[in-house]
Length: 571
Image (cartoon, rainbow, N blue to C red; front, side, top):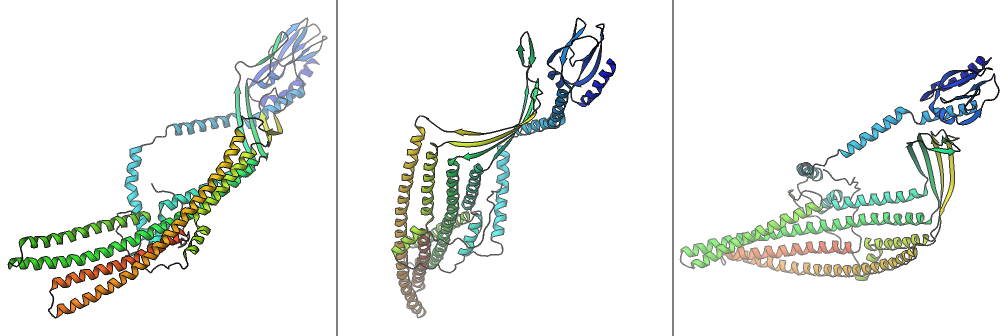
């Protein structure tokens, strides 16, 4: 009978054989004579720590199971740790659940992955000279490839061609595009405060020694020696006004980045226009110097001839040769200045300043119609600087609201799902939910001072916008006057050129009749070329003045073509 009862109990506990970390436990069967014999089986190590209910066997001739390697006999009665079969089953379920969540192989794999990542990160090495050498070798090739793609099949470039290339390759524009995308991402990050925040946390704890609680003359453990916990943490802001104002602030920042990117394009277009016409003007000066050099060469030859005949002194011949060399030096200076200006133009276009560039004269720009008051009004309505200033004031106002929200409470809802391997816990998995609220009662008047400072910053932004408005009005006024002067200079240059051309025609007719020599003719030709150069340069100055006035009004054209750029720099 006793043996049959023990075998049935062992059969019910056979499911523990497959649990992790088994240990041997025993059963003591006592007979009526007080003699007993020890039977044994295998159960999980977690089960032993749960077998802490003290019981004392009473009466002889009974079979008493106990689940501990420690036992004793007192007066023929077994005194041991007991545990109900229901508790054993619950412990087994916890052990199986823990095995699913915390398998030994998965933990080993995770540990190896973490160690490998830390090793690779710690062993990373930056070789500065090698990086600099690689960049120095590759970047000229990148510039050459970019120039071939931008100026493929074109012998010379017009103003529109230069502007399109600059809008595609200019580095300032690409930086502004990156800043625009960053501002958009910051706005999205701010919006994430309205969404739930979900975190997964894993904790491993090992107690050495295992904590025990004193109960009378004995003690018993209160935790497992090793505990693993997996926690799912969910939080969501229920009431936090500062998040609303922060989102509005970042939204204004995104708008500022977009306007700043367009303003950068406008300024690049103005720079390209200025350098383009400056290069054309230097080319015209170079032509005039060529004409002067030819006239100086003729004069030097004639004086040298007169010297051989004894009609002039030697110093006069030396003076003529010095004049010729001076004209050639002046041409070299103009050529050098032209190459440097082309280099600046190429740099603005995002190309190598060493690239050989040929420019072609294109059509003229349309002069805006209206009076000064009309131009100033247009500038106040559409200039990017004032539009940015408007949004900066709104940002400061949002900061005032954020400072004001420091006086209000904030509420956050949370929910936690915990899975633990601690066998002393009644439930291995449980939810914990609640609502958390925080309100500042006193922080040394910091919130009050922050609120006052935010209001002062609003006044500061308003004053800065007023300063920008006055400066913009002055800029439009100066650009308008410069345009009028340039137009008057074109009229005068046309009259001078007409007079110089008539003078040359007259001298040319006299030269054909033999009334003047070739030196006088070449001198008059140089004057005619100079007048033509001044006329052409004055027309170029009008184009630059028009571009400056349009830019001061904030109406520079930038939509030459749809341009997309990844904003990444080549290495």
